[in-house]
Length: 319
Ligand SMILES: [Zn+2]
Image (cartoon, rainbow, N blue to C red; front, top):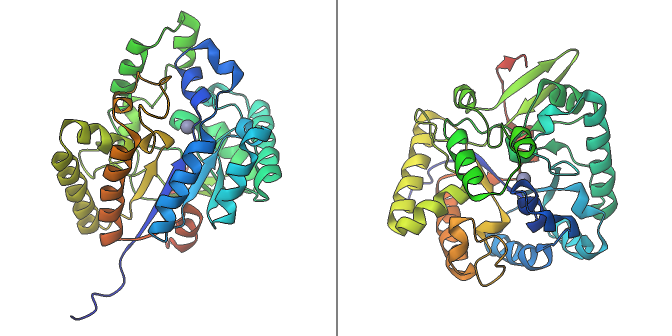
């Protein structure tokens, strides 16, 4: 067989959202004891990635990095050769309401915690719940970040939020804070290809979480699992089609994973408000494997830092 040449580039990342961060967004006061599943999910994800010789980016929350109980799990991510990104300190999806001074403090605190636990200084950032503001971009550029990955260009954000609100016991104030959770309708109009933010004298690469070209429906793995719940062949057909469209359109996809893609009802019963948490962990790992293998078949899959380094000739935008 003739060699088909180099595969186009794609990146893969995982937002290390912990059990407490979901309980917090959902308004469950028991989050304050900071329940963690990192000791269970991290070894499972690392084994999954090692089997495929993949190196990806883990966006880590500072609050987890300062807890002794999470130290071993976080250190093992770096030992396996993965990149660590910053996913804020407190994981508040209303980060876009913070002032610049508050953002400086939030980011610095997370960096210090993450570096302390992993020895890696993050060069990439993803806001919790895809929260993004002009002030965040300015602070990231000032602090020397290479890339931001906080945009999800979809029109479905308000729909996901409505579902979340329906299942949560939130006060009026809590709803106000979460009013942009998962993004607004206008986010659907953002670019799906990487670009460069021009911020004063500085700049910052933006790598969006890829959505389906034109339709802008999500193609990250938690969304695929949602389709798999209806029918695994449907989930596969949808993702394979999306990846083929990306290749035809010259879009280098950046695909997102979450811990809950690897955990099931046999691992935790505190998060049963997520539809996917009614299935066992092994079933989910199998579905995720199908999707990641489909991605690897068509693309060279790298961590986001490497993806950012290898991007060429980016269009510029101002925030
Ligand atoms: Zn998150």
